[in-house]
Image 1 (cartoon, rainbow, N blue to C red):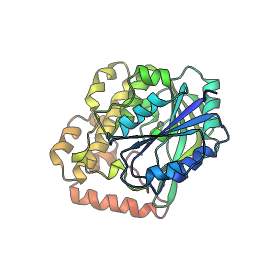
Image 2 (spheres, rainbow, N blue to C red; image 1 turned 90 degrees about the vertical axis):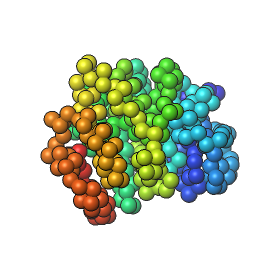
Image 3 (cartoon, rainbow, N blue to C red; image 1 turned 120 degrees about the vertical axis):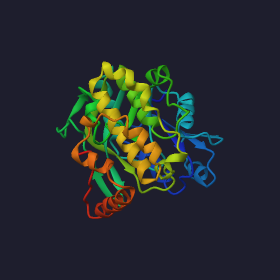
Image 4 (tube, helix red, strand yellow; image 1 turned 45 degrees about the vertical axis):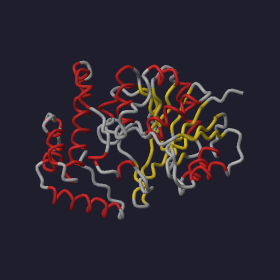
Length: 312
């Protein structure tokens, strides 16, 4: 029988996490799925963790290391279902995740992407995300303005989304030329042409305590998405300019904390400062030494369930 969902999991050196991630899929209340794991050249025992499962719904493919975008695109090519769910190899689905996605699709079948709310595990503590224009805890439906709604925390996160395969392939999938922001780049392309459906109940945990995350890689060694490619679309999507500036701010701050001053200036010079709040303007003008201290303070406060953000 053809599976209803294909769950695509890119895998690179996640030996400590992948078993729990796979189990979170197998424990779903909605059972009609296949799991496509792309072992992207792992050098640890990640693949052995997959081989230990005895479930015909799991398929393991091993490739040379080409990066997460290639792995996800390759996984979609191997998939059988018409609807693709993505899951990173260190994140966790709650039991009703696929059931909720199926309900969203049944109620709103013409959307380009379906997103569930998620929380983030940071320093052992779970934090609920803040969606800028959505206050209703039971909201379910297409979002009026994706770019406005995602200004604080993103409506879409790789492990929380489902994309119809036809739309994914029509848009060309993930951009394999980049390895940082490849997900955001695809979400923008989808949101420019399609409605985005969102259900504001948490069914995913993003494990930011996991090791070997791309965010740990120095900014100068990342292939970062090109925000300028979307500037032309700001004429017809007013909130997109504000959203691009929020991403420029985030990238600029990473560069400045890393001592990449020229690259930080590149991003900051392209910001329309009417889109920045007081905290963001203050941080942009602060020296690197203060930014490093403030980042450490932010991480320390998270241990006490205090999650400060420059975006609100």
